[in-house]
Image (cartoon, rainbow, N blue to C red; front, side, top):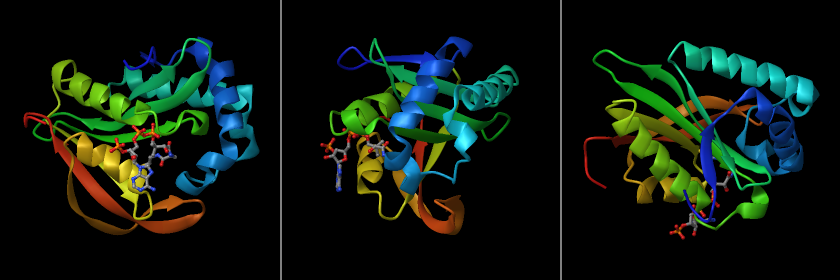
Length: 176
Ligand SMILES: CC(C)(COP(=O)(O)OP(=O)(O)OC[C@H]1O[C@@H](n2cnc3c(N)ncnc32)[C@H](O)[C@@H]1OP(=O)(O)O)[C@@H](O)C(=O)NCCC(=O)NCCS
């Protein structure tokens, strides 16, 4: 994908590496994520998370990818809530290991998933939401062809508080 980073669907063999990645990034991610119980950061907790994600993947409603640098998992990127019919839409979420920030990996991952959503999944639209104080994520979305479509008050409970979010969409038939 970029600088030898691979994008792959999560698998049960990723459980220990994913638990380690979340442990390394626990404080880094805390302002941007829902409150996580301590068990989330354990191998057992990640096994349950991945099993749940793979069940949703089997049901065609989620695409959970991990980013791998050859040694470590350095992030995840996921399409959730995949809806077909006349909507053909999904929600996008992602994070990149703090040690790898600012190298273009987030942008490359979003571009790769936009491409897969169009070519492999046949979707029409991806939606993403960022906190107002997350300019790095907004920059990724802007450079990947997403347009801001609104501001949703109290949209997601992040870091323990219902927080406003900027909403973005990417119409997949549109050129970048
Ligand atoms: C947001 C995040 C995914 C960025 O990943 P990354 O791999 O560092 O991103 P990239 O290097 O591809 O690009 C970041 C862009 O934001 C820009 N940027 C970084 N910090 C910025 C800031 N404070 N203000 C404005 N732009 C900023 C960078 O310059 C870069 O833009 P460029 O491509 O024009 O140079 C990562 O920091 C992260 O995981 N954060 C915590 C979780 C999170 O916020 N997830 C997204 C939720 S919507």
